[in-house]
Amino acid sequence: MMRQGPVIDGDMVYHGPDDGGRVFLTFDDGPDPRFTPLILEILAQASAYATFFVVGEDAVRFPSLVRRIADEGHEVGNHTWSHCHPWAISSAVARKEVCYASAALADVLGRSPRYFRPPHGRLRRCMMDQARELEQTVVMWSLSAVDWGPWGRATRIARRLRAVQEGDIVLLHDGRRRYNRPWETVRVLAGFLSDLDNRHLRPSLLEKTGRCKGRIAGDTACAHNKSG
Image (cartoon, rainbow, N blue to C red; front, side, top):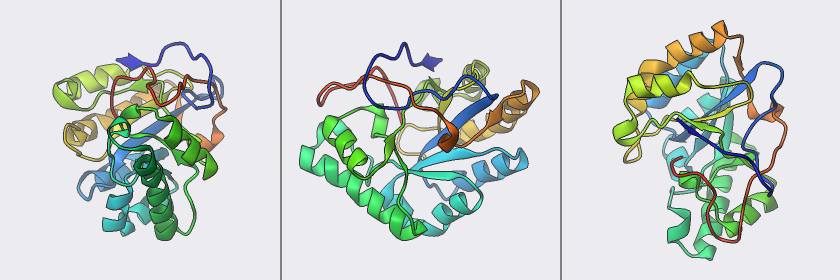
């Protein structure tokens, strides 16, 4: 399990409120024409809601899928235009990554996204500043399912998800992008949602979270060591 440690200072959301029996599921790197619909169907069957952080260039390729996410009551967030690693590009390009994705989503949905998450969870001051200029709240996570790479097997994902607690913002993936394994996520998602229901925890939208603080220092890193 990858859980965010103590929060120190800054201006980001890592965790929702520890009351009301809510958890906050987030899916990154879509939309994916194969796996996003499967995840939407499982969520619908459980009357569960989530936030999807989508990649701008894929939103342009699959606009009807992005509209479906929104039409089914989920939130759509900005996950940059092309999912470039924030530390591997210039400041000017990094800002454009945020702006272009925001504009693409506004064109597809008729409204601008309210939330931004940087690729790989890697923070960069210029990206954070650009998101805030666009009035987008920066959202990280408190627990990762690690549904990617050699650790992303269904049994291990399910074990990590059993550790979800009230108020957690949970990182999952619906997009395949290189190392992600959304097919494994699909295998465990219905059981996970059933377990949440048995524990009286309700998957809710991020708009109902409170804000808490996290670290951001110049153009460097946050404590996360993967993925998104």
